[in-house]
Length: 124
Image 1 (cartoon, one colour):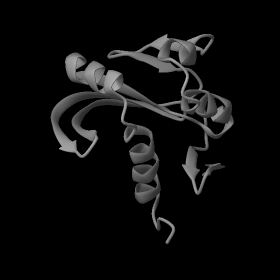
Image 2: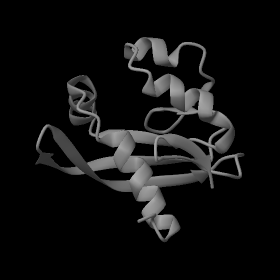
Image 3: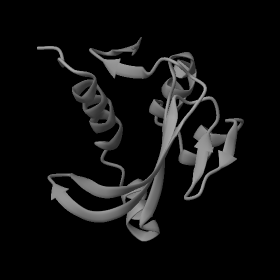
């Protein structure tokens, strides 16, 4: 059954992105205590595919246009950005769910969000 609201579609996209069993990412989030999320725009599918390709993290960022955010680098051209501070973490099998307080939200230049659903990317 497809998500019925924008909120549910957003939750689904974030869960897909965050529920990767990557120990390195988990340890970075744990030690930093703060993180930023760049919400990719519809025209950034190439970046989404690049980050999903499974290359070493340093390869993902080569040549990606970024700017300094208050907490971490932000991907230029995104739909928006979220700065957050970790409040708690919970074990979820071979994953860790991080719960955070939002410190700041900023709108970007993109006007459509990029979501990954049913094995393909969609603009909404």
